[in-house]
Image 1 (cartoon, rainbow, N blue to C red):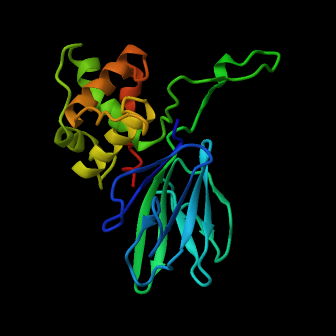
Image 2 (tube, one colour):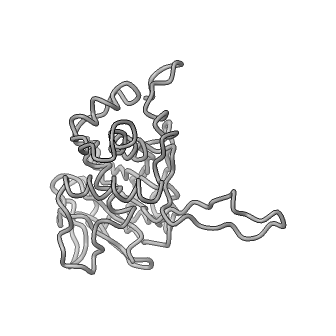
Length: 247
């Protein structure tokens, strides 16, 4: 089972998502061999670095002699890590990461997902301090992907169990008061991530292409409501905070 997914930026080859099982390595740079991620920019080192999948997180090595790499948490308030030149095996704990590579006057970016982040059900721990039970569907309710999932489920929770699934554009309008920068691409990105995290999308060992976007939305809603991943009380997360919109 893969644990890390690398989403290449524009112009990188191969362009598709690179899925890494624990222990697998993906090297990146201006040049490389079969299986490497090629970044055709003269400001990128021939052998720039490597990503290693390690369970629920990943390790980053910076092979550059001069450039510091930055790993940003896109959902954090400026949270980031600096990976100094020559640093090997730096652990990255974020569930979503954006790797930023300085390249001359440009900044090259690629995304790294860690969808196997697990969360314990602390209410199930015994009074004697027994082991915590890992959730079957590990969702972080503070993340934007959970709000996208909640918006998908809202019509069936508020209106009718047979209400149609909202379109991406309808979700954009629903979330705009609490997420001013939201757009259709961001909603689709989160739907795709949810499909991976909730195991609706096939793994890398499958030749199946997986459901289309509409099919993914319907499958996500069906799964979320069947297992109470989204409940009526979660609809409050879609309301604007009186102290100000989320940035």
